[in-house]
Image (tube, rainbow, N blue to C red; front, side, top):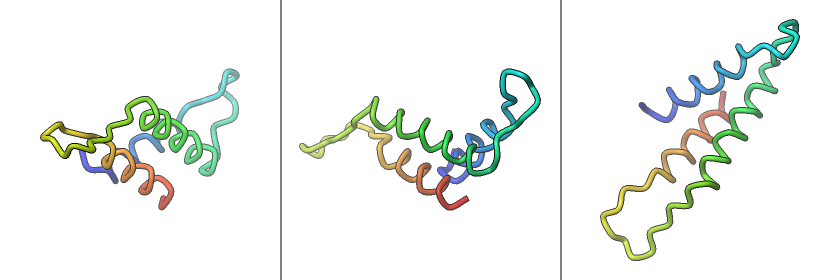
Length: 73
């Protein structure tokens, strides 16, 4: 999945999530902030630095791109 598609998917999931009472849904800004927090947690939980430039697949750039796409929504 491309970064933009993942950004939209995460944003929509938060936007459509009702609160505990099922009355108030998140605003656009709240949904964006929650999606960014989720992506930042993924990034922080998986620090993929590769100083030796080996062939290990890293998802770091993908998640950084997702975060940028969410910010641009």
